[in-house]
Length: 111
Length: 116
Image 1 (spheres, rainbow over the protein chains, first blue to last red):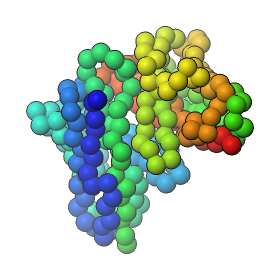
Image 2 (cartoon, chains in turn purple, green):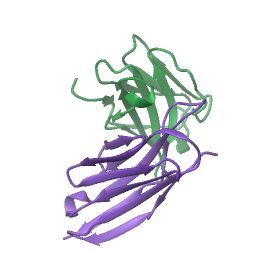
Image 3 (tube, rainbow over the protein chains, first blue to last red):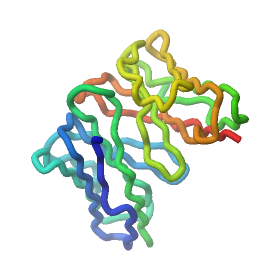
Image 4 (spheres, one colour):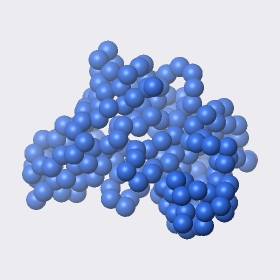
């Protein structure tokens, strides 16, 4: 079964800290997504990437295709960054074309 | 509209009843996806449409689940003879196209289904 593994499952940090969330997957992909879900809220797409690195404000996402690994970084973290961060992949090849999701990382940033 | 909309936002039903969930994708988005998020579980893919066709229905959890999309726009997800294990948030997403370069997905707010 194609799986997406995220770590850590839970992370509590102080405001201002640099945050890293990791994602690994098992087989070739055509794209990887980082999503954010606030408690009781909807899901927002943060990044979609298939190679290299992308940056939006304080968020940075990187992917290493050879190692089948991606990281999401948050610089100068803030309490409003508290949310569940979900890694999802779009597998290349046949089969269903929806995303396969990791279980999410529950991030809490304390003031 | 500005984003993906879903209705109803909440649905409480009795075991054994049928329910219909609706999704309005972003105008111009040809690809539409249904996902399910159960309490304590991650997100799981159910089905996707490219235009009106659903190339792969293997993600649907049982034959009680069906989905259709007419006119390349609105989609409905129907669950027949609901069971308590169907209780979940059902999410819809749309994207410009289904290929990897068009695959940034925009999610709706979800429908929270509770089966008593």
